[in-house]
Image 1 (cartoon, one colour):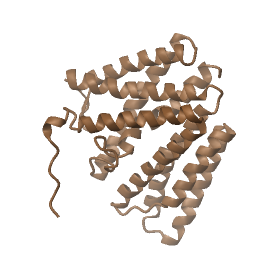
Image 2 (tube, one colour):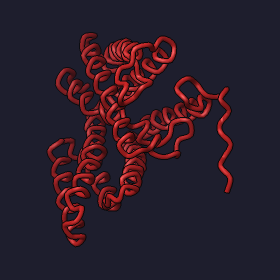
Image 3 (cartoon, helix red, strand yellow):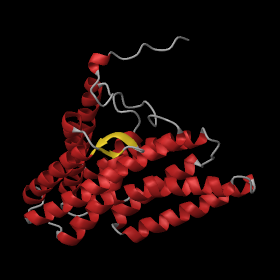
Image 4 (cartoon, one colour):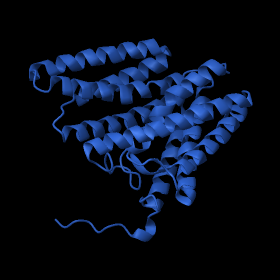
Length: 282
């Protein structure tokens, strides 16, 4: 089988992605999110569950290439259990109980395999449990209040603002590397663009979607830009350690689902904290 022809360089941006495909997929994902929230907000959890399951599959597949074994069906069950617990119980402690049960079952699942690689496999499984099901469990907690749809839209909008602000300012004015050993294309100028976009969108969303006070939007934007940048760097370091460029190729122009979830997973918990403690539910 011959290798596929390389994509036309003219269709790529300075970030090395196929921009038309990336834009089309990005717009499509936003449409799916907004449509599911507008139709029936519990349907959005189905979308979240599907995306997180694909992300777990990507991680299990990537770790498996290094000989690390993880129980994919159990991880899927934990995802579904934590999302349901977060939405219907609306209490983080119930989600944590599901997570604890999942860890115990994962350890039991690995017992017959013996001592060789036990700690390695269980540590990797624990990382995936925290990285995806635990972080994603804050989505239904955001969604469950009466104004949950607007809270989720705020979370998505501010996080996307971080990505877009950093991307465009970075490719136009990026000169000073932010973390050259982890992600060489990230720059301090791009981080400044992310911060400005997050602060601005945070204020707009809090004022007009959540009917809160402007300074809450500033707080939200400030914590989101730090969390989103950290999430992106963490995922980049995971890929470097595994020796891969993208988690998969399921999203043309973007790579894998995890390549798009990195900042969202990192920001959802801090968004929930800020909105829960600084804004009463409408």
